[in-house]
Length: 144
Image 1: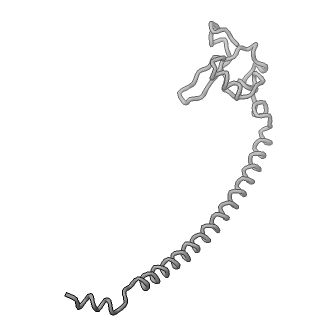
Image 2 (image 1 turned 180 degrees about the vertical axis):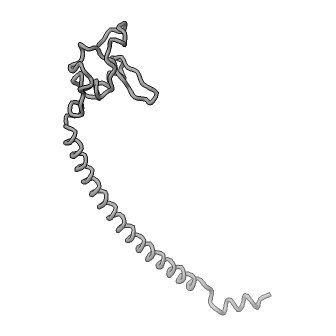
Image 3 (image 1 turned 90 degrees about the horizontal axis):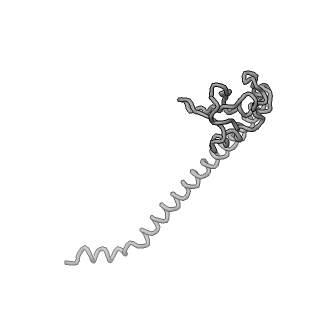
């Protein structure tokens, strides 16, 4: 780690992916060092984190040579094609799930319609069973 008294002007100001590549560690390792305040850092107004490392600490002293391949381990075309293939398979999976859920919804709506019809029939049957006989109705109407 660099000495705190060392001026930030003599250090390289790098993004987290660039620092990870220069130091030969993962981005997660850099973020943990920042979290533990084991490496000098700052954040800009957009919230991006920049770390400061000395030239002798870095494996790659020129940060302009940091490439996607060095940061992610994949070339730019491999990374993009890999992501596209993964996304296509994910989309297909999600489309199948949507289709299944739409079919399930149609089935559940039909089932709910049948249940409503049964409840209506049962309610009508209960009304017919609980009505007093016609003679009892007449007595109530004629009684004072």
